[in-house]
Amino acid sequence: MSIQENYDFAKQAYAKWGIDVDTVLEQLKKVSISIHCWQGDDIGGFEVIQNERSGGIDVTGNYPGKARTPEELRSDLDKALSLIPGKHRVNLHAIYAETNGEVVDRDQLELKHFENWVKWAKEKDLGLDFNPTLFSHPKAADGLTLSHPNEEIREFWINHCILSRKIGEYFGQQLGTPALTNLWIPDGYKDIPSDRLTPRKRLLDSLDKIYAVEIDEQYNLDAVESKLFGIGSEAFVVGSHEFYLHYAMKNNKLCLLDTGHYHPTETVSNKISSMLLFSDKIALHVSRPVRWDSDHVVILDDELKEIALEIVRNDALERVIIGLDFFDASINRVAAWTIGTRNMIKALLYAMLVPNKYLKELQEKGDFTERLALMEEFKTYPFGAVWDYYCEKMGVPVKESWLEEVRVYEQEVLLKR
Image (cartoon, rainbow, N blue to C red; front, side, top):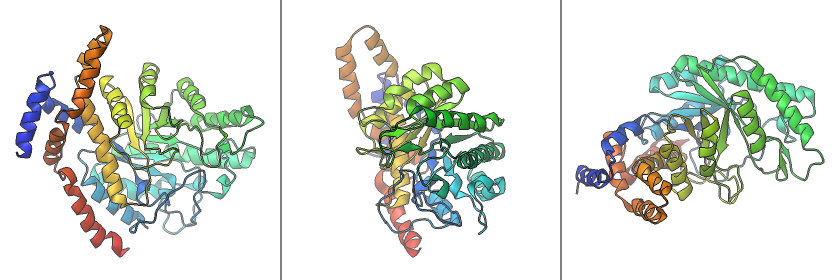
């Protein structure tokens, strides 16, 4: 059967449950995923003085073809985006500034250092998001930044974060879509602290100073990101989930949930509905932890599907800002972007092709037998046929055929680096 014939068959199967597949695909087209640039160069960045990675961040693998320059990174992103259906965004860290060989410390960054990214984004009709980089720097060497007991070090990072918010605002002004500027810090202690309160007081004070600077929310949205533990901060992280959740609620900021930043038995999908009751918007960094925050490439597993279901069944596609955050250097990096982003979109499509309203009604009237039966049966409905049709109509490769394009790109571009 052809892709069209399979699609027509699938449409009939879903129509029996009141699901208009054509309408679903139109809705899916409007969803933008924020694709993280740092998968392409193993979170190296383009600072003139290269610092070793720190802050509990680790990248394993040495697959050939890593991007070495901004031009190479943008070329690799272009290739990945050509294989992913839909119109999306790109997420930058501050270390991806382009300073033309000049040493510019992070508290001295200017808008001009990101002009090339904005020009590229305009040409490709992309939105840009941003993150201050509070790791892999001499002033973060001891694992503390915004909560550091040294006031000069705190001021350095406060100024960096203020500049980062201005860069996010610049992106929004230039591109006509607000940037999400997300703040994550590695601060914490390897062993049991004797004082948890004082570092958190310092972090609170630093955040208040950062957000006291007025930035137009029409162009920039502020988010804060928590973490349970990290390498070198196993016992205590200053910016815990409870800390940032309360800070975001009190100060009208977005709380960003990274799927790798919680206990292995704790799921982000279970948090989404609670947070939507109290927040207009929330943000996600979707990753895949394997026993720890190891940032594996996103696969179409149960938790990814459940995250998508929580977004879709609660009519929150416009309230949940979805970004990705993984970095695998053991496989082709363009393929990693492609696999992870396509899976995120697949999960959303899967969620849209479930009779969510009817399943809610079953739960309300206590018919848990039919609820469970249908939830299981829909796992094998012809969702794949709809995905193939969507890819074809969006002008990207169907099924695994995209892999051949990556192989050609690897031979012609990546292996020549």
